Image (cartoon, rainbow, N blue to C red; front, side, top):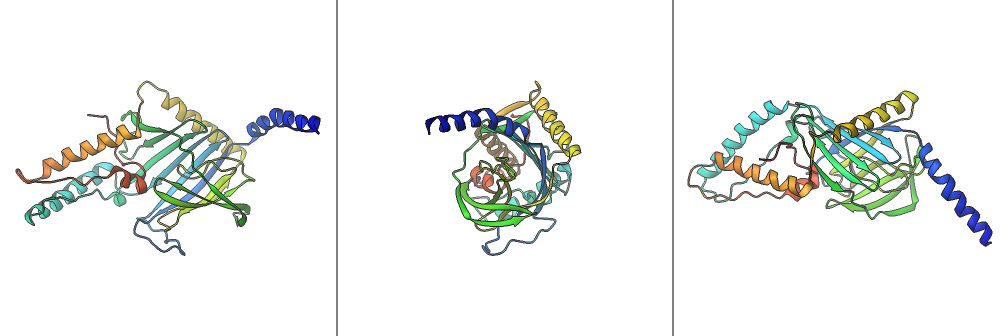
Length: 298
C-alpha cells in the first residue's frame, strides 16, 4: 500500500506540472452589468447602455489579463461637463445653507477602459486608460497582493453554461457576497474581474443583490486566439516592466485621490463657507473597485 501511495505521489509530482503547462491559452468574453440600486435577488437587471460593460479575459494557467470597456464620452468632454454640473450643485447647496456639501462624480457617461492583471500567487495590478491618451503618459498604477477568497463550494448544485457543466460556489470579497458558477473542465483558477481561486474557470458571477453581474458570452481556444493571448499578456508584462511605469499601493492611490478631490472641491466653494467632503474610498471600491482617475501624484 505504501509503495502504491508513493507511486501515485511521484506520478502527481512529475505529471501534474506538465498537465498544467499543457493547458492552452484561452480567451473569454463577458457581459458586465452594474446596477447599484438593484435589489431584486431573484432577477438580474437588464443590460442597457448605461449599466453594462464589455469585458475580455486573456488567460494562461498562471496569469490572467482582464479588460473592461464602456462606450461613452471621451475623458476631456466628460470632465468639462462634470465640472459644470458639480459647480452648479455646490453653489445650490451653499445657497441652501448646507454645512456639509455632498457631491460625486457621475461616471455612467464616461467612456471607460480599465484592466486587471492577476498573477497566481503574486500581485494584482489595476490599470485605467480612461483618460484616453495612452497608458504610457500616466505612469502610475495601483497594485495589491492577491487576496485569497474563502470560497464555499456546493458540489451538488450544477448547471450548464455554454455547454459546460458548472458548479456553484459562494464567497465574500470587497464587501459583497458573491455567488459564482465555475467549470472544472476548464481548469484555470480565474474569472471576471478579481474573482479567482476556484479549481475551474468562473463563467458566471453575481452578488447576492444582483447589483454586480458577470455573464460569459464566448469562450475561444482556437489556434489564432491562443497566439493572441500569448501576445497580449507578453506585451502587457513588457510595458509593466518599463522604467516609465510607477506602481503604487491601493492605499496610497486612494489617499492621493481623496486629497485631489478635496482640492478641486475647495476651488469651487464660496469663500468662507464651511464644508466637509464626505468621501469613502472603500464605498467607491465596493462598486467601481478603484476610482476612475489615474494621474501622476502631486
